[in-house]
Image (cartoon, rainbow, N blue to C red):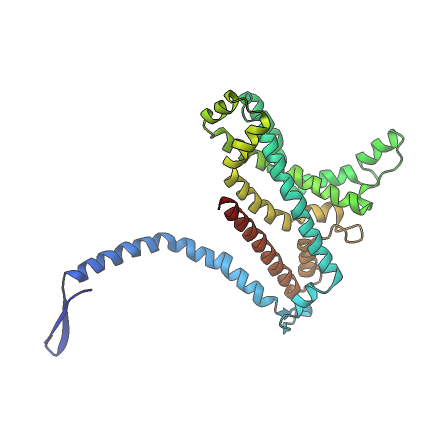
Amino acid sequence: MYEKRGWIRNGRIRLRFGKGWVEYVKKLKSSLQAYLFIGPFVILSAVFMVWPILNGFITSLYNTKWAASIFVGLENYRKVFSDNLYLLSIKNSLLLVAIVVPLIILLGIWISGSIFDKARFYVSSVRVCLYVPVIASMVVMSLIWRFLLDSQSGLVKYFSMKTGMGAVDLLSDKTWAMALVVLIMLTMSIGQAVLLYVADMLAIPGELLEACRIDGGTRWDLFRRILIPLTLPTTIFIFITQTSEALKVFVVIQLVTKGGPNHSTTTMMYLLYEEAFEKSNNGMACALGVVMFLISLILVTLRFVAERRMEE
């Protein structure tokens, strides 16, 4: 790679390099500049992402109850996959992902595809109305829903009594409680999906839309042939973000249903909160966090594998 010749002067060995050494130094300098640019990101990622994940996995191997740390190995994970309450929380979390994420994607595409080519004022009005719940505090929105659904003084009960339907307590029914959680999550997330889809659809060349109309294509043809394929990157992004949000749902459960009735709406994140802050069992809480991370990783990986097979 480079030529090296040496000589001895005053008892010290000195080296003299050829032209190849100069080129090597230039390449090293160029690489060093690139490393300096990505260095801050790598350091911050290691401190705030990689280390917390590793530390959480290490903590999950201990029983930290009663202010003591006792190494228990994989005992916490065995309990997660054998205890009925933890299995129910995993089932509820996966059920929310299976229902909420597809609904957000389907409704987002349908609403966006129905309004993106309409008058600008109309499109802006719809986007603003749908996005207000997204920018509002999730705590505030959950408290509003709790006020509406309260079994003692809620507006739902008030109107049901006025219409002669009798007292209605939707939160005391397992099916209705889960359905209401799904509905609340939809109202808080659909605005972001519509905003992203509309922005993506507005960037589609007008020639494609005009060609579809000239060829006699229906609205369904527009969706199937143009809108859905060209917004696939946005769909992938929404799938990843909403899958993470559905697995991490906590505020809605805490303020509206409190995991009831009979743990029918208890999720992994809600149990993680109880283990960490009510039972002071950080080891079990970290084990639940690791399981949530692995489930999210598996779901996202399956989505990318399915997309690659569709492209092939």
